[in-house]
Length: 444
Image (tube, rainbow, N blue to C red; front, top):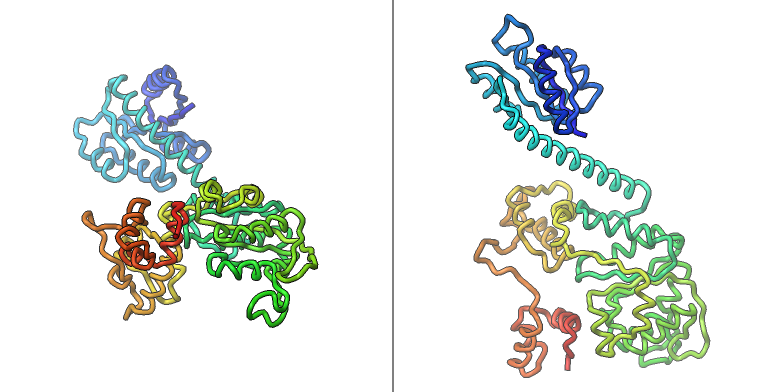
């Protein structure tokens, strides 16, 4: 039930307002003097204050009301204050409105108009209180995350990032595989590090492998190791990533690039903890928590026969989706400042430019922009020009990933030559490969 504090020395005014408010489900507190009103405010938390401007029968200056208003505003800056006045001259009331009073009511008042005014103010007050409670809850949740968990130095401020972090530390204590999905450069490896740091295997090794950065014929050797002579150039036995990660966590980035044969071996490791080095018939046993990540549509790859469905369900016991940087805009400026060296300062024009940009390359692109700006800026102050980013206005074309039809058209014009099509689309060959894989387009 909303509560209104009425500060007025006239009992008949207080009674009339109390009766009126009770008909609308509003509780009334009454104080007959400024000191009594301030005392009630120190003990209670009304949603709104209605205060008279004069508290003695022989005064009409309004000075008492002004003093009370200023005292309430100083002690309780967030509470709405409505002025109650019988003056014929309202200049002082108008001045207090400019100083922060919410509204004023002239005596005698119209009950209907008064309740419309107060109803709107009470709704605003309720919304403000709910916002304050939500902010307090979010701050409490953030403080708890930072106090109770190892976040590996992650810089964040957006609620979307907080949800991912909360889920990451929650699933960390489990031994189930986790699949982290999201666009390239968004920070999936950092999420994997946080899961490992808060897991029961945190004292063990954390071993990361980018499956997209290696030729397909070498991925299996990297994962499982190889005996001497297992392939050309293998002059001696080598340890694989699973052996190196024994007792800890292995993070397989760009898991969609793993060959079907490698997928079969990975499935076996997930099921039994056993594998064989390339060129060896001897089994090895390891205890490893498997985390993986991809920006590809694995369901589509399964339909195309390029990814094993049984492996997908093994890896995807728990899925964490990391949003793009554009989907968590409150992270942009904290990250930008984090990437700057000490002594460098972002000017307002630079901040605005950073917030306007769409960040198709996500956190990785932001890091590169800030490092370049810090290196090339002649002063310690970095403005928009120092960022080296294209000006964004209503006529600017923001870089976007090409869709299926655009890629197919470029490939047709290039006669199927991927390098030529990538140049036409403004992409690197690797970026075009990833985009084609995401859309399910065959590279041949």
